[in-house]
Structure formats: C-alpha cells, structure tokens
Amino acid sequence: MPTAKDLLEVKARREVYTTAPEATVQNACRLMSRERIGCLVVMQGEKIVGIFTERDVLNRVVAEGRDPTVTRVGDVMSKDVIVVSPDRAREDIESIMKQQRIRHIPVAGPDRMLGLLSIGDMLAWDAANDKQILQYFHDYIYGRH
Image 1 (cartoon, rainbow, N blue to C red):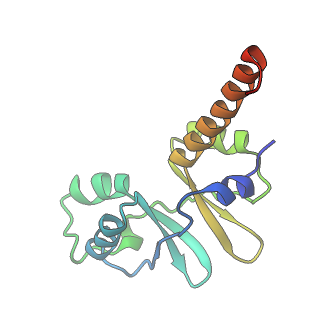
Image 2: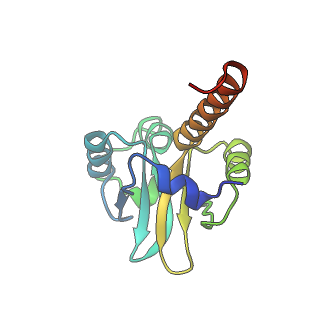
C-alpha cells in the first residue's frame, strides 16, 4: 500500500513554496503566479500555521473587496490545516481530500515539513499505476515481446 512518502518520492516537482503570515496577499499571489502553483504553506518559523490557496484569494479577498496590497496572508489563510505523516496511506489521504473538500495536504515528520501533496499528485499516481496494470494485462494476453 503506497504511503505519503512514496507519493512524495515520485513527484515531478518537489519544491514546497511557503510564505509568512505577515506577507501581503499581493506578494503571495505574485509568487503563486510566477511558480504556477495553487497554494502556499504558511509558516511561522518551522511551524505550519496555515495554507493560502487560490480559493482563499477568491472567497476571502476578492469576494469581500479587500485590498491585496495591504491585506496580510495571515488574515485570509485557511487556518485549520490537515497535515499527514509520511507513513499515512495513499487511500487515507485521498479520502481526507474528498471528505474535507481540499486539494493540498502538507506531509510532515516530527520535526519538519517533508513536502506537499496535491490532488494532481494523487491522479498522477493513479495514472501511472493504471498504465502498469494495462501493460501487465497486455503482456499476459498477447505474450511478452
């Protein structure tokens, strides 16, 4: 059974982009745009204190008419962040994402953040696994060449 650690090891892009709660929404959005990512993990030192997503921008900044040049990430971030351990099963993570309606989950060990998993990472894992299964059946039916 694959774990969060297994998923992190096969990710094409392993960087985790972070920001501080004091950063402006505008600066955080510029970083997200430049890196073509959908969220930033909000850190206070080594501690995860929130996650800032495209949904946060839409629902808590744009929809509320806040000025992104002065609004702080800490004021509009999602504060109840679900963090999983590296040994958490892939199926559990997918279930959490579905139940909580979230697209990103940080993976952390006892003393530091190890990475970030997205719904896209889950789909990529499924696609790679499905391809292997299809190849196995093809080889079984038609014989190995």
